[in-house]
Length: 160
Image (cartoon, rainbow, N blue to C red; front, side, top):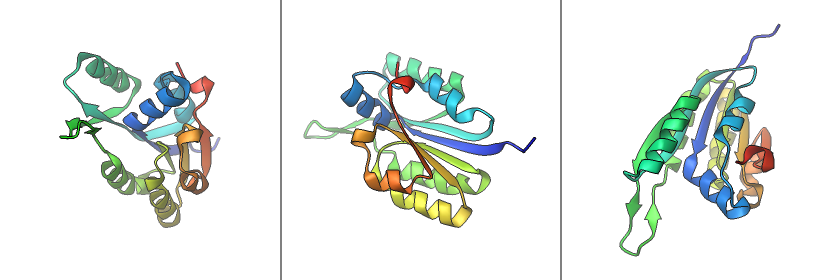
């Protein structure tokens, strides 16, 4: 029997929440996703990047993520003067992936954000990682899909 491949998982919670809601009017199924990406693999890291709003439902959801196996990193939810809101984790995700790529065979990214395409290109060339991307295809940058070693669209089977 061959040795299990190691995997590190990075989930942009806001991205997957909004794209799943916008496209399907449904939520992402983190339990099904976990079963899929961890099967026959050794998990090195699993981080979900979320916002902190001091909201009980959000806290309960974050505790569910922890129970599944994720570490949860929180950033304050900021409302701008113009009423728009922001809690952008892109740089934090990129730093963590760069720091953890060397210890993992496979990097799994759950985000459709095209800003990550150069990151995947770099870690594949520098560390020879396989890169799997999960996202809502209609709302995913083509450059990110092309850069992934394997691309998996979020479809019915991965929704609640």
